[in-house]
Image (cartoon, rainbow, N blue to C red; front, side):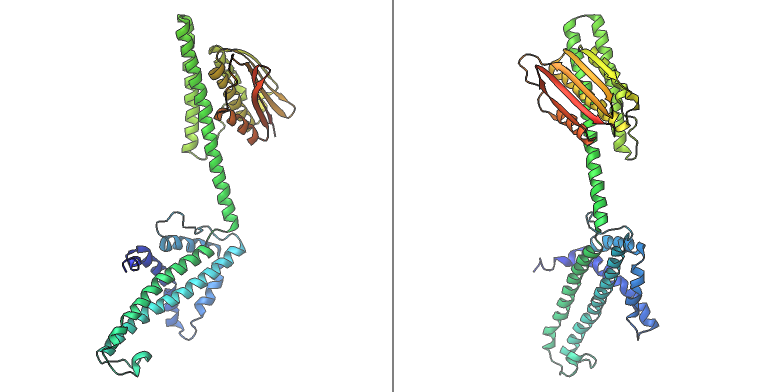
Length: 384
């Protein structure tokens, strides 16, 4: 019994009732003007529903009154963009008006019927009520008095659920709006993935350089080498902080441009960092790297950074051959280093996956793996 009466304690029940009553205010005003043509408000709703902004207003009302406090209500609050959306709005207005009329009738006449049944039980039947007009007054009418109230309760709760279901069907997002929401969600996921890669590449490189430099300085026991190592750690740390600030800027400002991210034109900084860390870098940069389109150049820089980070992390101070160049309409990157004895390769961590994913995102391809006793990272990125 308590469970069946639980809707009476929910605010949603009464906000839905208010939502059903709102259109009847207009009908009530019209009935004072011309009570002989009550169908005119329903006719006027047709041109009103064709106005694009009406769909937004109805969606806002549905969110506030039918499902208050629910973020994923499923009601569109955008103006009607197509004729299909406008026709759906017209149908919704007519359905809302019809359900409002039924609700108003129930809210007015069912309590009146309950009152008249009680009067009939007291011996004072009302001649205007067909049910009790011709019946003699009798106490047994009191047994029927709760029935109209139960019917009123069922009508209020049931019609509230019906109007909510109708709103979801008629005010829900159209196919174009669902596609736009899906594209926006996809963009957000891609942006989150890019930010994760940025943090992994930048901070991973900085920490790897710092660890390698600190270990080398302690093992060398040379004050001059220690000074150079500390300077390299400081420079790498500053660069990592700059990259971190850029990434955090993207999080704080969704419209912030990404043009501040490093590009292949700054590849010399990576190569110098690897040399200071003890790697013997044989680098060859060819072609107009400064004219490579921004997205390709930025992703190419990150691929090179991750490849050098893996060399320092897994192979240490070993000879590294780096080739970066523009060949035709393609940017080609190659990083090759000998594998230490007993080591099969750097593994299959997120860094190597990130290299392949970055290349694939640009329409290119990348490969990583052992080759004739060396470990090789090779990538080709199309300029267009």
